[in-house]
Image (tube, rainbow, N blue to C red; front, top):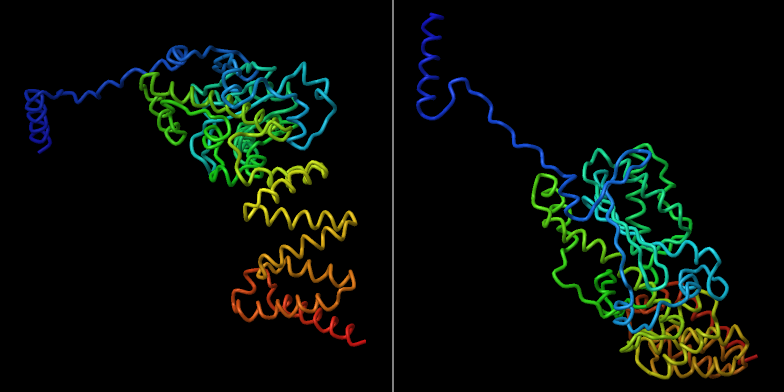
Amino acid sequence: MIDARAATVSALRARIAQLGGTGAFAPRPRPPEPDLGGRAAELGFRVVETAAGATFVRPHTVDLVPYLEAAGLAAAPPVADLLALLGHPSGDGGPAWVSGEGVGVLDIESLGLRGSGVMAFLVALGVQRGEVLECEQFLLVDPGDEAAMLTAIAQRIRSHRLWLTYNGRSFDIPVLAARCTLNRLDPTGVEPRLHGDLLGPVRRLFRERLGACTLRHAEMSLLNHHRVDDVPGIEAPGRYRAWLRGARPAVVAGVVEHNLQDIVSTVVVGARLAAHVGGERIRPAHAADPYHLARHLQRHGLADAAEVELRSTIDAGIDPWARQAAHRLAVVLQRRGEMKEALELWRRLHVEDPRDLRAARGFAIRLERAGDLGTALEVCRSVRGTRSELGRWWSRLGGGGDAGDEEWVRRETRLQRRLHS
């Protein structure tokens, strides 16, 4: 039985061999591993040895003048203006360390956007000195060399105090810190001592102008820069994986250029914001710009400059920003003791829109404190009519629900009692 089975197997093997197979069923030879180091060199990356191993670095120098000119700037603003924008005010010219260290900028390309599998495979670091950006890009050629790349990046970050990012506070820096932890490295090594994330200031100053406050929108609207043949960031992970499997270097070359452009644009956005706050306004102007600039200035304690912008917004007369600016200015005037002008502002706001319950409240309070009890009572009665007219929309327009009702009832009762007494 065994001999018959062996003969059958031998016959089948012979038949398979005749059909083009191999009688011994030899495994198909595996293709040779791609020479990633050599192909990284084709992209401009060179090997740099670190204490943790080798990493691949691409040095590059960018002239910022064309980008600044397109954004309407003759030169980069003083670093002191940039520090003030970020909430770190300093003397004229900025602190002494800036001249030696420059201003750093960072951006990463990663495999995914969330979860434990997020890995930075391309990291761009730049140092701005005047109108020149000295760049280094780190490429993860072998995932096993991640610790070496992170060690080199941490060394660069520790050598400069101020680092700019765009959404780096929520993404780039946490990703690098998490990868350091997984590689048993100190995560604080990749955390800047002074971190200026520009997404917050862009949102505060230009959210109506931009809509979506992405770096791409900021480039087009604030810098007058439009990328050509850019590789979308969403394609970067797939292109990198294809390159690791042996795809031609051109597949990932666009990702490298995208990463470099991100840090260039981040630096120029920072310069444009600092110049805007310093008086070189972005043109063409948007009706919301002076109002949001006023809020930014108030946030940083520049009350006089903020008041100029509030009055400019009111004079332009474009709602909703003119009305919001008038609300804010009225409060400023009250705190400063200029009650007459504050009362007039509240009156105008109430007359123009009786449904503006905040204005009605401010007007009634100022009238009562000025001793005009009769007019204050009329305002309360007009609010009662507005309450009936609005119905269930009362709370949504700032009526305050039951608590708001009780406040207006108490105010009206108090005014009636004071008038009769």
